[in-house]
Image: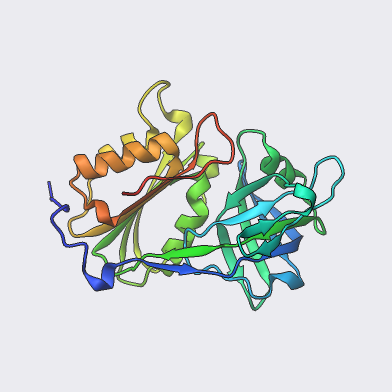
Length: 278
């Protein structure tokens, strides 16, 4: 087995870059909705306040603020010196989402909603119609990962598909990528656009044995890894993301400095995002 842990993490061309953005809150309107798969709705947003929006990192997070389900009123904060300032202390329900695609020329922003447990985001997405309003805050910052690795490993469930889509689009021709993507079943697969040499492994949670290890971890164990130095990106349920990172470091001898792992959600909790890096 190749030992990646001894590779130097200090190569300047492989150091990630953190970029901060001006904190802004925008009131945007639904332009159109599309049921991409049985468990995925793509909503395109737009409006004059989208001007100046920026999202250079493939796994950026913008915070979506949802209207009050009873009154339909959308409350947004203003950006103060110490963060958001809410009118009369009122805070609406908010969730973090990765912008799937931002087209500044067309003035559009695409957000994918993975539909599973019934929650405020799912309820809003399933009922959204053109003209409906939603609030968007940020992204506050971006984490830019270089593409100059021998290959790239991307692991995630359906909540991570927008970020995987963006990373594959930005990888240049000649790059090599291995993607392990978990969805409910074959009907939930989507297409990816990339110039890279892509090996795509779909993992179906509906086929996973009950009570076993996380399906993505089982898939990683049985998937031969290419040779060469690689960057690994992981985003899924928090405990599964932690187990995947541990396996890469302990069993695959991956360089921990070249792993970015996040829990995009946590079983039994709402509105969580766990960073599992060193």
